[in-house]
Image (cartoon, rainbow, N blue to C red; front, side, top):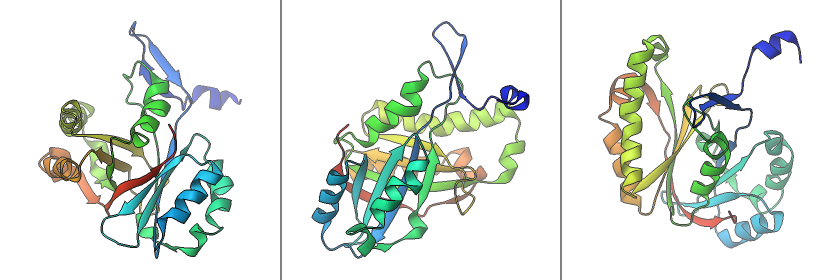
Length: 238
């Protein structure tokens, strides 16, 4: 490692039980792909199980022939090797890709988490593979660029208000969320990918509605969506 690389620490930061800084140079990459022209989902499920891939397959509520595939891996090489080869073979190669729904992001820490491995790796996997969270709304978001120049204290207030809604719904057992950073990973220059997971569809919609009233959404967001809304039809074993 060069001297400059040693000075530039790209690991995720947290805070241990004793208040001391902790770090972990691991993160989970998660990718969402959508397809149309799928008349038989059972063949997709059989192919996914035979390949031993980790992921989730959703039925698209807005397209009777639509599906969404969520996969995740710590090594991004997985997407240009194993997954690429798999998707270029039947039955997925026979479907019609919907690139407007393609999303790729990475888990990240906020700097205060006491267990970084759980925050970055284990918890996101548990959430998306939990059969109780059967409904999902996945979408990208892009903040206005001026938000980066807002004083840090004000940024924290804005983010706490927004994050507090997710916490409230989660504590009540209605919904939970996945938040991924996608800076430099998104063709439309989006900043984050969000997945809202719920037992029923309505609470997921209610989360988005509640967030409309926050300062972040009303003043600091440039774009939201497109939204993919689906229900789990297959999950790999967690």
